[in-house]
Each structure stands twice: as structure tokens, then as C-alpha cells.
Image (cartoon, rainbow, N blue to C red; front, side, top):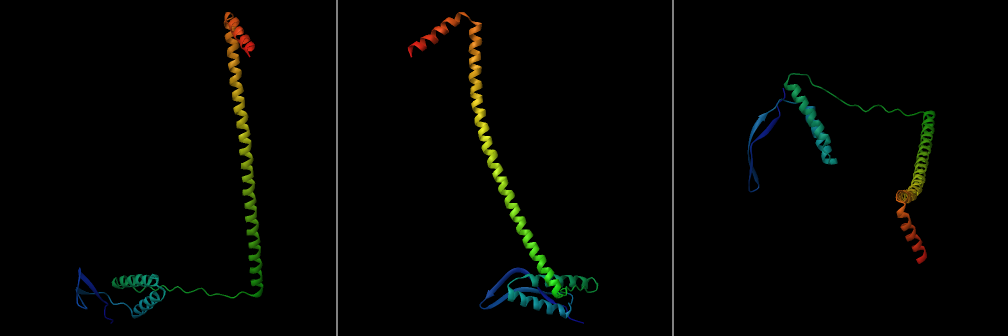
Length: 183
């Protein structure tokens, strides 16, 4: 039977330094024993961390160890998950040729699609500019017609006023003719 892993647990967060020695207050806690291959896997993961600078391999192995320890403490059997790389098969010359043609057709189709999409965007931009120009022209026409309408309504109100008060016509005509003469 293997001996359990010995873990040290800090009683308090205080660590005193005296000269070059570190003095701390720890108590030993025992954990259930783990299989020897787990220690090897952790060592390999640690080396990978040191080589690459990434913590991912060590974290994965640590999680695997925790799962195995829990399963072991509960009396369950070991859970092995090994991911094997799928076998890679080499292509025959005909398959390589077909793959090459398929890639070429795909590349050409992508170019056609991008060209078509660009043409559609350009035509939409041209349509927007045409509509903006037409809108500006219509707005200018609307403004001029609005001014003309206001002038006609004013003239109509003047005519109605003159018809309603015939005595005022003479004085208005007199003023209008006087203005014409003075110019």
C-alpha cells in the first residue's frame, strides 16, 4: 500500500523571517494515497509549464488529480480518460488532385462572391446619391410652390377685402396709382 500524500496547512497567515531561515507555523494533514503515474503526470505537466510559460497543462493535471482523489476517497474505481490523436491517412494522388481542384473552385467562387457583393454595394451607393439629388430638387420645388401659394392666398384675401368694402376701393386705387406716378 502506498503512503498518502503529505500536505502542509498554514495555521495562520503569519510567516516570520529570521536571517536566511524561514520560520512558519504549519501542521501536517494527510490525504488519500494517489497512484504513482499521477505523480509522473504532474511532474511532466510542471516541466511543460516551465518550458512554455503557460499554466494550462498543470491546471489540467491538477484537476484530474483532484477528481481521482475524490473518486478514490469515495471508494469508486479509477476513471481513466485518454484522448488519442485520430489516425491521419495520406491521400491518394487522385484524392489530392480532387482536393486541389475543389480548393481552386472554392477560391474562384469566393472571388466572384466578393466582386458581386462589391458591385451591389456600389450600385446601392449610386442609388442613394441619385435619390438624395432627386429629394433636394423636389424639396426646392416644394419650397418655391409654397412661396407661390402664400402669394396667391394673400392676393385672394386682398381681392375678397376689396369686394367686401367697395368704398375702400377708391382709396386703395388712388394709393396704387399714386405709387405708380411717383416712380
